[in-house]
Image (cartoon, rainbow, N blue to C red):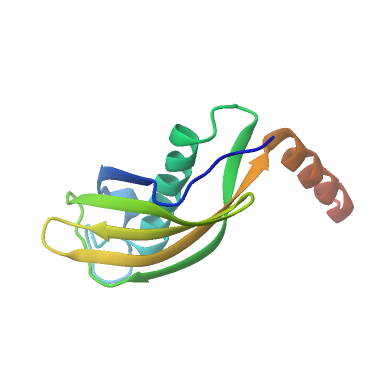
Length: 136
């Protein structure tokens, strides 16, 4: 199947930070947005851009293959975060995004994220073969 993903397409998404998305080692009580949680939200924003604008077939989706993000400012539980993604490069099924995140005061992250468009049944079959070879 061919997908006509085009550079320049964007998606913005707002989220509210909850206590499940924070670090637990800095001090007692609710803490700051963790980098892994931030990256997870960035990845989902890029995935949704592809699903909403280019991939309508439920047998197709995308997986993350590269994350190059600087987490540059702390954000608290309860804060609203604006996530922005923009397609900047398309190479077949490999899509590169420029990504940014902001709280209500400042930019909190910036970088790049790459995703690869997959056929879910084929991906699952390859994954199951690997699991069997690993004896899992």
